[in-house]
Image (cartoon, rainbow, N blue to C red; front, side):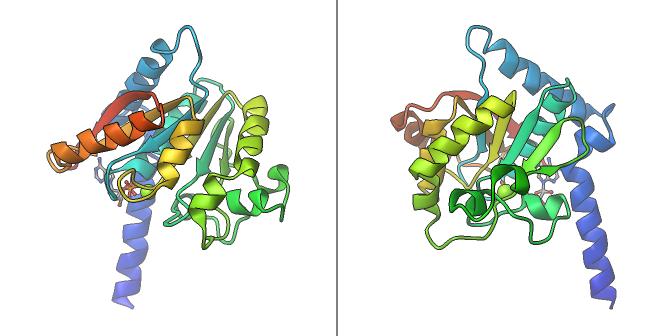
Length: 222
Ligand SMILES: Nc1ncnc2c1ncn2[C@@H]1O[C@H](COP(=O)(O)OP(=O)(O)O)[C@@H](O)[C@H]1O
Ligand SMILES: [Mg+2]
């Protein structure tokens, strides 16, 4: 029983941290996300970076947290933003938004449901969410499919900005495939923890698919 309560509390804390730009827009962290947002927007004066993937060399470096907060921060400017959980191995966004068994990306890609049916309107500005959907046995094929390219084309017509949460670059091929389809990549690294060599290798792999690394978020963990 005690364990259950603690778990519940931990979950609440985690969700709070994930949504800090929404729950505490005056905080220093929210301000930092606004700076990141501005930097991205300034670096894309000539061509708008409409589709962005948030990734990191390894796991637990803050990708999901950064994806959520960046999406919220951009939506706070009045943009129509779609946040997509493209981590088909360890999806987390349905969990952060408290959604159970929600249709998602994989369901749309295999034609089980239409895009409109799968999209969840978060009520945070114009931020919509597309969860991962059922975890497939062949995530790389799904991400690299023609259906994914067509879907992205449709989505780009409906939204101003599309943000993908993703698996670590060094652990899967999915991220590289997706990075090749997106306008830009935002890399998250854990301050003082992520090895330099891993950052260099992740960058090299992303360059191979001609991905444009827009910037690096140095995630400080206290
Ligand atoms: N700046 C931070 N300070 C404290 N905890 C953080 C911070 N960034 C992420 N976390 C926590 O670290 C864990 C992993 O973060 P997450 O965003 O899920 O990483 P990833 O998606 O890279 O696996 C989560 O529990 C998250 O709440
Ligand atoms: Mg994650």
